[in-house]
Length: 312
Image (tube, rainbow, N blue to C red; front, top):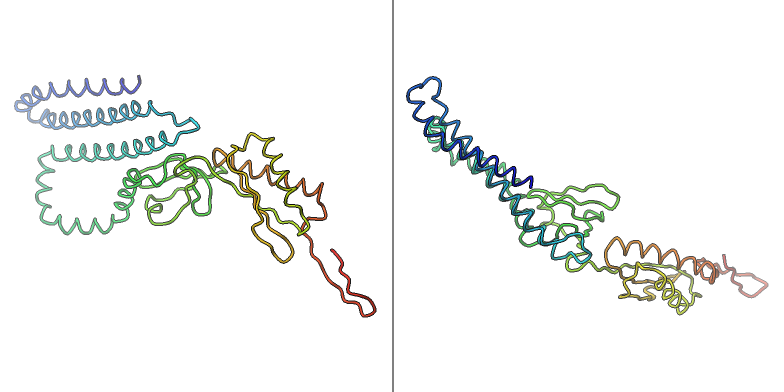
């Protein structure tokens, strides 16, 4: 309701100013000293009023469109896509409305028009200078529009950028805000995401697979680890029951590396699941296979006895 109020009041004032413009225009011919600038002031107010109305209409249109999509749902891929497009397009529309409004205000003054005509001859050189100086700024604006169209990421996508893991919190025309997992904010120019690689964990779906690595001695029973993994996952709601894998991925000089793959509904949940599985698996090995914890073996040669080995 407040948006409609913001729209109706400026619209009524603008219409009133428009009807009074003719009256002030005639009056200024008689009272040149006092009312000479009233027509121009009226014009400026009318332009400001219509610009304000257009900005409010853009805001209302955004609200109406986004009402059909709920970004708080678990399966919100389509909603986040629409939210991203609408938010960026709203910023583009607002920018165009403001620029056009300022331009119309400037050309409504005769003196400014004459100055503009006088400077027109040097506009080419000035344009080149401004173009070079504003190259990066223009590039970031174009990058913002390109992100809205191609959508390499959307609002609330889970990403890994500059070694930091977080969520896309805000997408603007010239910069993007990433909310880091510890509540810090990482602000990056829009061009960054078009020039450098980054990880998007929720590009096509919010489902994600997490990995847990465990290093043990060669004497560990892998079948016992698989049975325990099944028991651990059945006792938690963090697992989405889609992916459950335990494999030996490496055999090093002193230890073997076991990788566990588990899946969850989203990135925060899979983080909690990884921590939970790692903790429970380590507890299982400590209680049931303490001799299989990582250790170093040293072989000692004795002159009067057979070779013997001692575990440290």
